[in-house]
Length: 122
Image (cartoon, rainbow, N blue to C red; front, side, top):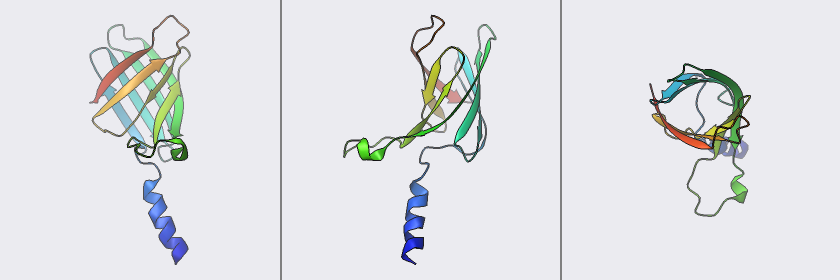
């Protein structure tokens, strides 16, 4: 019985901030991010559409869990974030707000600068 109670206490903590399987779309005037979630929100496939040039970039990624043993005692953030890679850049975002995400672009090999996009659900 104690094991069942412990399991019931741990399960709700797993995946805080993780999204459910399905299709999601977020955008602003510059880009649209289309996300396909699968494997219980652990894996993602994405398409980034440049709303000005219609260029499409594809990538794949996963849910990255934060090691909660390594954070400060007063840490109040998410326990993970999504990260993915395209052929040119790395990206990450957290999913704690279902209406808005902050997408970070970094480490680009094509001359694009590191950049942050604020995107809203469609």
